[in-house]
Image (cartoon, rainbow, N blue to C red; front, top):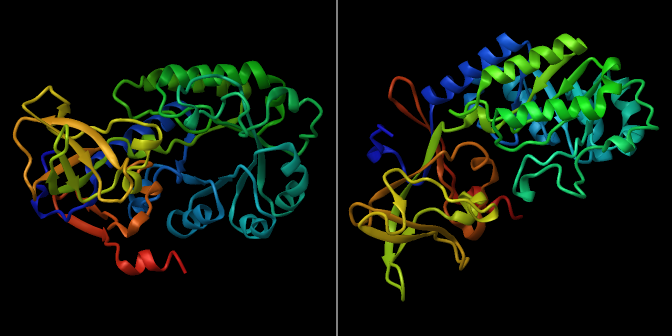
Length: 377
């Protein structure tokens, strides 16, 4: 990062506008050359202060809940898709007043709520499960054995799909082009009999199109072949790809605590509250200028400020010793990270800011005690 972070508040999620724009330009090209539509998955990136920019490149959003759908309507506009693992009866009327595409997770919910959605003029679809294994970590794998997500081919055989206009298939998580192509192949292998009666097919999210190793040309060609064969609209709904490598989490050193092994650097963030995937997946986030333990001269364990004993990011080494007040930059912290944060322990939530193309910083959100208090009663 070439940005002078000395004037950026700490902690802070910092989105870089130029990087977001570069991702969006690539996604626009994929749409133009393949003929597909790419919509934003709000579950990964809901920073609505950027929607005026995102909406110049993407035609709409997909939501996973009523609240995300309302955000799409209020702040993005464009096409309004929604899928949920299960819809609530007491929310469904409002959902039908807002959505234009709606995907059911099961035949039973389609039978129960489908007539209401059809009466509202919504284009309805069913999520299907192709049973492929493209994601190693079961926490993020929609197709692990016993998955609750999507209808298996054998359970579609006797279903009445006469008024279903689309099928939705989501089986990826931050995968490269080979997985995207295998997904399309598997969809054709398992569900070809249903495609002729459809208006659209949605190949879901997890297509990490903006990764430097993702071959977008191969994806473009595969989608073109699919569209030429079946004459249906094709949607992709990535979330991570929109905000991939577009920003960081700026943090500061509050204290350095000696232990019976490594010195522990206490940061003004929390792994469990502000980057939960570090513990859930788990994975090791990249820190600018740092390396694995022992690779550089000075090695530390990095810890958060919550009372959780395991609130630890990991062990890292640095060329120079760290000092209280010093800054660290956790890279690639915009997609999924921000949407999953909590205020556990009342630990201060990181600010949210944008580093604009004209090199100016704009603070978008500063969280307060009232934000913490008002969640609880």
